[in-house]
Length: 186
Image (cartoon, rainbow, N blue to C red; front, side, top):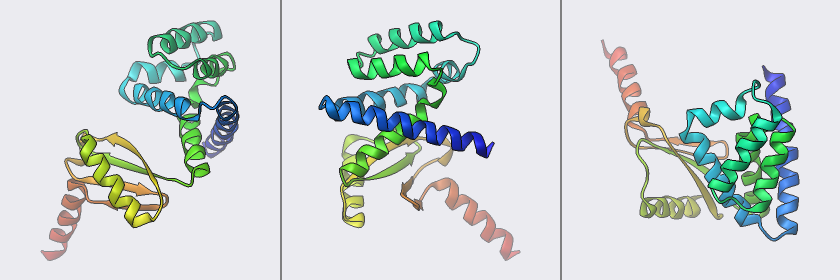
């Protein structure tokens, strides 16, 4: 299993680097980043889409047609659509989430930004996202790019990851700590 993770990581880095180079040449770094973020949101919100990109049963032609239709429907840029077509033709759609993460990390690194993952129980408003970004910028001392995830199982609060550091103020973890403390009392 670790071998497959290594191959996917290397594969994702190569594809992300190639896409970054093309986007940089065409002065479309932000356009491609926005496309990839919306694509990641689609992957996160649809079990069917996740199954589609991971399915070894579908032919190259079927995957290519489907990804082309999706790109047209989502109004993705021409470069992003060509990239997705190439990934489908090479049977690499399974690595799409890793490629997206690698591209966004590469973009953030080149811009001197740090990426923070914020997990909340409910969607955050724009003002809340701005407040979190400002607080993290003050703490980290660099520009912060947020990626937001929804996980209802945390019940409330936030889990914030910046690099290898994590702050978990979720209600779920607080309840778990309280449960452990209560076991120790008796």
